[in-house]
Length: 548
Ligand code: SPV
Ligand code: MG
Image (cartoon, rainbow, N blue to C red):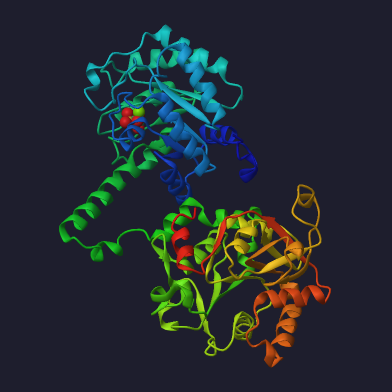
């Protein structure tokens, strides 16, 4: 993990040192997870206190080392990622002896934590405000070994180890506090946190007076909160830690909200008292991800649109299409059209126009625009395409053309999108099955038959039709086609020319492909095998039930 020195011009450890050593009183705000860290940073704090009490509490456990030190470490990593601020960990007793402290220091540095505070008690610790006077203090020499090992372990000279003197908490008084502070200072401690559970600052002030400026002194005024901050300033304390207030604020707000929702069984009266959802997104940095997506993800979906030709009834399906066109016949629990929309949506393409004809009112799925071909009974695919092209003159995006009765695997779209050519079609090599079943199919002839070699060469369409000679057939067009935005003018002209001939009112799209190829347009053919299904008969509907 890298330290974000660049944001501030200096690393977190340096910035923490500056706060610790500055002649001003500086403040640390408690944070216990990524979002509270971020909120404290936005409020203007220059450093954070990752307090043991609140880190434990947010996990729902006691401040008695019930959360393991690696669980604490994991949360610190989220906090360090969520902010650029220096963080001082409340490292409790150091989680053991000298050996645990030196390993802790190494792991904290790896996570860009600027400082750790260790207290002179025994593992497992108890919070200082719970029967403090019954708490056993560490042996001074043993505690000094924790400090020395920690200092020896740090790689960054500016990493700070603050030592917390619990003599007042445990009922020992000023002399013991001073004796301990002196020993810890000599062992290499970078500052003393003097803690007190009194509701006035007498103990910490007495300590500071005697200690003077031998090293910076840190306080946690939770219990003597009513003391004016100027008293701390005048006494020359280095840092004051507001140690648990974000969590306490959250408890009040969460409880009030939960009780209201439970009581009222409604959100009406809480909505204005909670942060909008978009505020959560902002705190999470959602906009950065959107920008990154634009930078890193393929954007073809954004630039493409689709025309689905779905006007025909599909009379061969009999009763199934009495009241709806084929595209709305259900397979696997949803209409064919829903499968088609889902395949495009899955590749990021959302702009889809469906050409309706038979029973248009039955074609009403969300996620598509609709264009009607009122003449559908007397016309066919080409004129439906013309209707859709006429309805939308936006030629700034690539265009996919699909049939409303053809479902396919999404990878077929991916393989078309990858290629640069103006026109690309997916061609199934498994065409003999259609011939054997005697069904109408759009056969194609290509510059090269399907083979291993064809993978490495640009296979181009030479012609297409329903009645090609078996020897000339290299595959069956799946009905999926992609036209680059720059070639839409060519497509429009080709459609218009064909459609102008009354003999072509019933023209199919394979005629358009053949006309484009005959006109010298390069139509790249991508060979695929299977993974699509043209639903023309009741038998096809049954087969679609197991299409996967
Ligand atoms: C903490 O915030 O976890 C502290 C300060 O260690 S106190 O709760 O006052 O002991
Ligand atoms: Mg603590």
